[in-house]
Image (cartoon, rainbow over all chains, first blue to last red; front, side, top):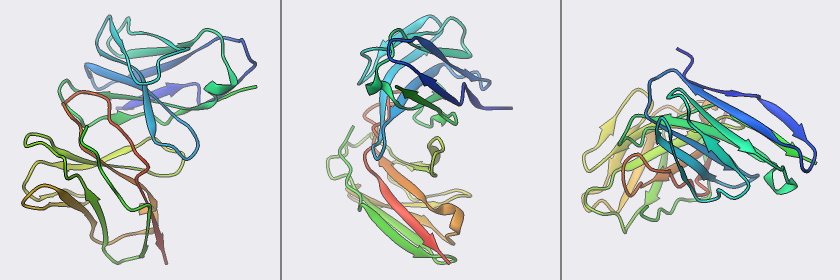
Length: 112
Length: 110
């Protein structure tokens, strides 16, 4: 039982490049979330999903897109990376109507 | 989410109890109090939650005042590995984003 895994663990991009971050969970959770954490700050929600095929915007969605084609996977895309998107990205999952969220180890992204 | 207030930092000696306070005076009657922690560079980890009764699990105890306006997370025998940022969160509804504020940085020293 791996829990929540994130791929890749580290990435360096140049401004304007695109990439996709993958989150996978093996707990059969309905809800999945993408957060970002900037140095010295708390986590902020980017997008979330309450089920396969559904997504919704969070607090800071601009510059990101997401997809939930399979229940166990939640993808976060950056179409044209900017230095302001340099951050640590955390994925989480939870059962429906439950605030006990399980977090992945994070992806550290640097945009030059 | 109801607003929460926590001290910025606390120190604790290894082996002693760590008592982390949280004020949530605007909490509604059906809102739970959740505690998470984040060890350096790792994803947040769920610790415990409660509504109005005191709760205990293998990690910690949660004491909620009778008026529910404040709570205390207790780590009964703190170890060096408990050094982390501890977040007190009161979600408005279940299954939504958690609002992580600045939390309390707990430093456990030998």
